Length: 95
Image (cartoon, rainbow, N blue to C red; front, side, top):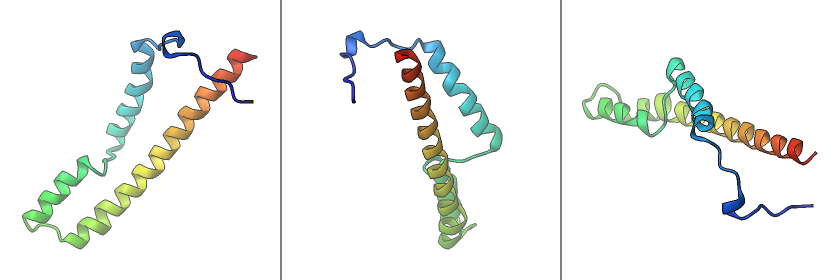
């Protein structure tokens, strides 16, 4: 049975510290691994194409496709993990 969520004013808001504790380790890990984002990293790659150091095909196949696949896999994994954690916590609270 699907339960309706309480109105916005009744929902408990997470303190900023809890949100920060969730975001900072992930941001740190992405930086340490040297992972790039498809949008942010494309600026550098477009520049290399514009100055002639890389070809358009090189950009598409060596940067865009691989980065987009990694971003999709990472994003889907994070959303699944956060969704699971949210529902697992809700199940424990109701029990």
